Image (cartoon, rainbow, N blue to C red):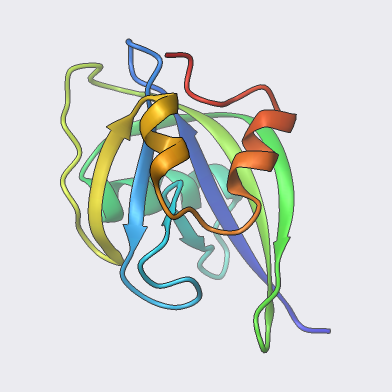
Length: 134
C-alpha cells in the first residue's frame, strides 16, 4: 500500500469557530474539510501545514501540537494525514478561498453539522475534542 504524507490544520478563531474549506479537487471534491494537503519533499509537518493553510485560505497560522492522524483511502494511493492544531497569526483575518479550495470559512458547530463534510471529519474532530466551540 502506497502512503502519501499529508497534513491538515485544525484552526479555531477567537469565537471558537472552525476553519473549513470546500475541496476543489479529488479526493472528495465538493466536500468540506479542514485545510491541508500533501507535504512537499523535505517539508516537516509544521512547515507543510503553514504553507497549505496560506495557499488554501490566505491565512497565516502558527503550527502547534498534533491533534491526531487519519488515513484517507482513495483508489490509490492512501493519504496519511497528520492533523495539527494551528493558531491564526491575525485573529481578525477573514479566510479567502485560494489554491485547491472552492470556498473557505470559519463555521460554528451547527453550520458544520449541516455541511457535506469529508468522511470521518466530524468523528475525528469529536474524538480529539476539537469540534467548534460554539
